[in-house]
Each structure stands twice: as C-alpha cells, then as structure tokens.
Length: 366
Image 1 (tube, rainbow, N blue to C red):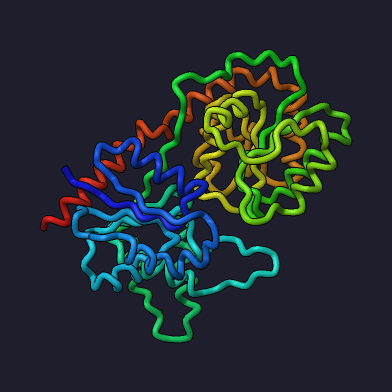
Image 2 (image 1 turned 180 degrees about the vertical axis):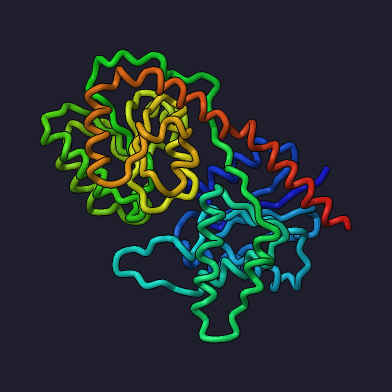
C-alpha cells in the first residue's frame, strides 16, 4: 500500500484540524511532521530548511502532502528535485489575505505561493470561493512586475488545481433537539482571536443587544496566539457575568458541549475561505448569522440565505435582534441546517482525498 508524508509547518487551528482528520480517516498510512502554529511568516521563509534536516528519507514515501505556509519550491531545491510527487493544500493565499492595521504587504509571500504551486504536482483549494479568489488575484499580482511578467504561470497552476472541502469532525450523536429555551440565548464566538475576524464588530453587536435591554449569554471560544487582542480584554470587563466561557477549550468533547448549548453562532470575518467553526456550530444546533460574502454563501444552503446571511452592519444588527427575540420560530430551520452540514463530514470528504492520493502515488511509478 502507498505511504505518504505530511509536512505541516503551522500545526494549529484549521491546519491542524485538516492534518489530523486526513490522517485519521484515510485508508493510506500517513506520517506527520510538524512545527508549532506561531510565527507564520518565518514558517514560510524557513520551514523547508527544518523539514529537510528533520526527515531522514523522503524516498520511502510514495507522495508528499504540504500546506501553503511552507515553501515547497525551497524544499524541492534542497532535495535537488529528489522528492516524491507533492500535493499542496491551500487553506489561504497571500494575494488576498487582509493586512493587519499598519502592516504593509510583503510581496515575497505571494511569490512563495506561486513557486510552491509550480513545484507541486497537485494543488487543492479548500472551497470554490478560495479557488476563484486565488485566480482572480493572481493576474493582478503578476501585473505588478515592471516587466517580463510570467503570465504563463496562471495556466500552469490552474491546470493542476481542484477543490476538495476539508472534512469536519462530527460526533455520532448531536443534542440540538434537547433545547428548552428556558435560559437567555447563548451566542457563540468560536473563531481565532485575530483582526481578520473583526471581533470589534461582534462585541459592538452585543452592546447593541444590551442597549435594547435584551438578556443574553455569550461563550467566547476560539484560539488566541502570542498576544490577546485588547478588544477581548475590554469585552471581558464590559460583559462580565454575561460571559459564561472565555477562552480556548482544549477538549474537543467540551467544545462540542458548548456548541450544543449555543443558540446562535456569529461571524463578522473579513477573511474566511471555508468556515469549519461555523459548520461545526451549525451541526450542533446553532443558528448561523454570517456575512453574505466570503465562503458563507457556499456552505449555507441557498434556501436559508435570506434568513441567516447579512449584507451590512445594519442588516446584521437587525437580524440578530430578530433571531434573539424569536428563537423558537427557527426550530425547523435549526434541524434542517444541522442535517445539511453532514455533507462536509470527513466520512464523505475522505473519498475524494483518497482518490487524489491514489492518483498521486500512481504518478510516482510512471
């Protein structure tokens, strides 16, 4: 049986979730070598050097899997091209990722995306939204070159690219049917504590509810990294006892319990190429309230767009207020939405990944 090596330079968040899920569900044996999920810029610059020394032999594998936060072209050069066929999974790209306040674009990261994609034998994007975003920004990025623009790379990268959703972990039993609505609504935040998720807009919406005299509770989940943004520290003080959970939950079962208790899960993101956290929450019975852009229209069934997608901040506040006041009216929607998320379960998605891995391994024999 074919054997694969997965190199993950940023083993945390969605990157970790994907690597662990693929390894757990694939019919193929996959070895995993990782670096911690911090200093992503340095990972893109230097992770290849670490993996080149860490892996004793690349040749005992029939295929290589990496994600986008590593320079596959650097690794290939270090190995003098002596690597098994490689698949790169793009969770994000450096052409369109929003910049932090005061940050200027480092164009080298965009070129790393390009050279890594060219060095790969297969390229997979985590959503159709991301695929189209990548190829809409790639020509603009190339056109920034003052001359000798390599427009040929667009076709070469596109020809070996496809979309496969990352699988989601779902337990066998879901407790959304047990809701009694005898407590104030529980609002869930289960995203990274970073600027691109726009937490300030989320907390502004909670202030709006408080000013309307609405009783509610909030569980602030999700990962924070080296430094906790000030907006979260201020929210902890402002909302006090309304906050029933503050901080990342290490245990997956405990995390699922919070989602099963939740009533509404909210996204205010500026950047989201798939949306595992929203899908997990919906599966556990939370009603979504998300922007009508990014990947959300792709993962929310069309028939629910009018109820659970918002176009601007005013629409967000109005829909949130209506949902909080009339939660019981959404019981049927809650069940239908939860069942629809099963399309993203690992048990279904692994079929596509294993077929891709089989083709990847076959190409090493030719």
